[in-house]
Length: 175
Figure 1 (cartoon, rainbow, N blue to C red):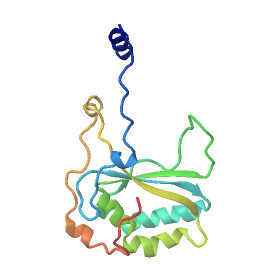
Figure 2: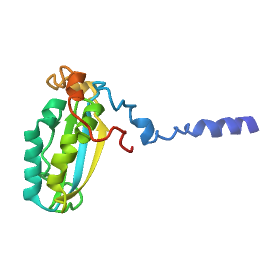
Figure 3: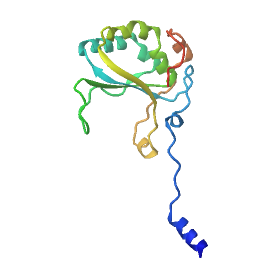
């Protein structure tokens, strides 16, 4: 009788799923120096305090050629066209830049040109307060991928391209 009750009790309880993996388990391992061909998205979000200076800073980035050399490009406008939830401040900016790999995003960020010539254009005083994070791009599910035009990077820029861009520091950023 006890065995039957125990059997019925355990049969009625669905198995408990393991907890989802933490953020570290979801992020793929990356090599800071070698382009592995796995695209990443650089997310720049924050509040703009001086729109004219930010626009000049953006123009200077484009004129520098760093994005082009490292395969980076904007994938969205920094200003939203609609708000479905919440109340963002009017000076909020969210910018997304796609790079062919983590190594190229890192090479852009820590390049001597960016850190010494471009960053000062938006600092002292600050033209905005921003957070910059890197996310791995997730490929679309097969049903969606079948509807997309073939895209992506045909080839990863050669290592000599990235090696030609001097860096101001070489340690990996804090994760």
